[in-house]
Image 1 (cartoon, rainbow, N blue to C red):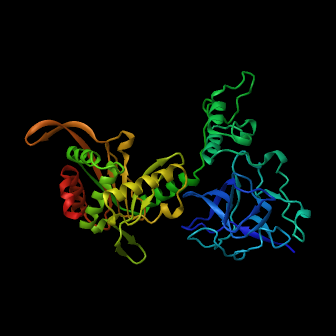
Image 2 (image 1 turned 30 degrees about the vertical axis):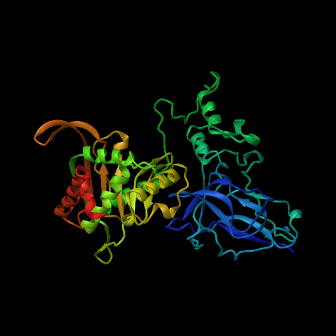
Image 3 (image 1 turned 45 degrees about the horizontal axis):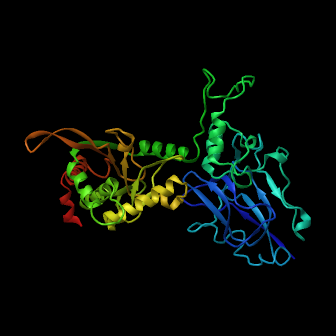
Length: 445
C-alpha cells in the first residue's frame, strides 16, 4: 500500500527564511526519483533547484509560481511504495532529513506570512494546492483543499526562463494572454519583447497604476536580491566606521603586460580584473589587517588566514557579489578562469547561496560603467573594499615629460576599527605601485 509523504521547503542556509516559487519542474501525477529537482525557487541570494528526498508519484503541489513560502512550509506530497509506482519504491530519509540541498540541513523556523505577487491568486494568504485525484493513489490521505481564490485558469504559464517571467511582470504583461512560439507553446523572451512593442488599442483604458500615468507614484518592493542588498548596505553603514582614501595610478605598463601575456600561448585571455585580483591578494599578504572582520560581542579583530575574494557583478537580478575561494593560492590564470565561471553563473541565475557568501575582501570594478571614482560601501562583515575606475588616456608626467598615459583611479574604503590611515594608505600605495610597475608582483609569485 502506498504511503504519502510530505516534503517541506528545506532550510536553504545562510540565514534564509523564505523563498519564492519561480518554476515547478514536475506536475501532479509525475513519477519522481530520489533527489530529482522538483521546483526552482528564488531566495534573497540566488535561484536554486530543490531536489525531493523521496521517490514516487507526486500527489499534490503547494503554491503557485510567484508565491513566497517560509522555510518549513509544505512544497509537495509524494506517494511512495509498491502501489504508487514500480519505479518509486526507494525512500531517502523522512520528512525531516534527506539530501534536499547539498550543504544544507532542514531546520525550519517559525512559519511566516505567505505573500503572493500581483498576478497570483489575489488576496489569498495560503498557497494554492494542485492535487492528484484520490483514486490514483490507494490509501493516500486527502490533500489540503485548494484556496477558494484559485481559479482553474490561473495555473503556471510555461516560460523558457525565470528572467522572461520577471520581464513580463515588471512591464505589467499578463503571460496568459500570449501564445508562445516555442515547443508546446513555451513562451520565449522574443514573445514577451514582441508583445511589449505592440501598442495598446486606442479604446483600451489606461490603468490607474500604470507607471506611465502622469504624477503616479510607483512602489517597488524591497525584496529578493534588491532587499538583501539594501539590508546589507544599511547594516554596513550602521555598524562600520568607514573611511576612504584614493589615488590615481598610471596603468600603461599593466595594460602592456596584459597585451604581452595574451600575445603568447593558446589559453584563455588574461583579463584586467584577473590581474587586479592577483594584485589584491599580494597586497593583503603584506597588509593582513584588511583581510579581517570585527567580532563586536567579543570586542576582537579576527584576522583571517585565507583570502576569499568577492567581486561585484551586475546582473538582470541586480548586483551580486560572487566569491572566489582561496584566492590567495591562485595564479592569474586560475583567478581569471574562476572569475569567468562565476560571472557566467551570476548572469544565468545559477549561483548558489554558498557561492555568494563567505567573502573576506571585495574588489569592485565600477569602471565598466564608465565612471572614474566612487566611495564604495563595505560588504559587511568584511573590513575593506577596493574600487577601480575606468582606465582612460589622460595627460601624465612620465619620466619628467608630459605624456598621454592610461590612468586609473583606485579607491579603498576600510573599517577604521581594524587599522589606521597609515595601513590603509600603505595597502593602496602598494596596489598602485603594482599597477604602475607589474614586475613588482614577481616578488610575491
